[in-house]
Length: 241
Image (cartoon, rainbow, N blue to C red; front, side, top):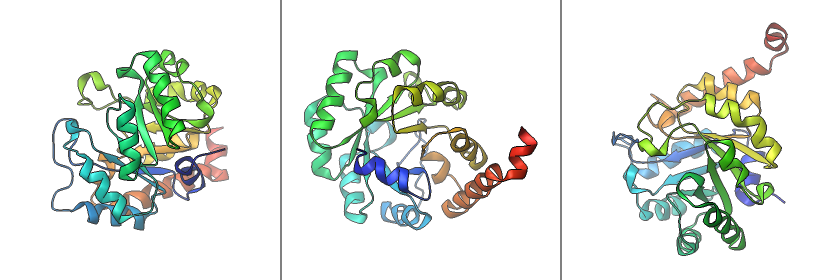
């Protein structure tokens, strides 16, 4: 059975987890004059089925951000941070999270698997982040996890532009692993690329910087939906066949 976070994403009109974060990997400010309430309000108005909150210090975050977002919306929330211990999972739930990020890259395989089990035992969704086949193979209970392909490299603190081909190359294997909800995460700036990823078969996209840097969040979403409609049209499909 799908979790509340997964169900909301799969059932939502818009397959985008919209992300609240203060800065990008290079430390550049993303919120400008906007408050967290401003951004959450725009995300909800745009149709976000779920919201990610970056509490990690790399991106200028803290736990108070998650508490504030939880008080502003009933959308399921992802706590995006480097989770390494059970007490962080318990705390995330108390703050209002429905899902927690578990990053395969930073965890020994046994610890990674243990934290997946702990997350599930506390009624939260493991949002597991992988970058290659070996990390994908280490995911246990994939049917209960969201498996997210990270298009950026945390070894460089996600300061590089990222490579969408990482998602494209791992999609088939990610689906075969058994997740109900394969997600492409990070480096998705262009609404056209976002639409192409969904058309390929991703059930969700995690987008923060692309939305926060857009001239208009609602305008970015409208452009995404336009490209998505074009890709689904019979004329477009016949032309690409």
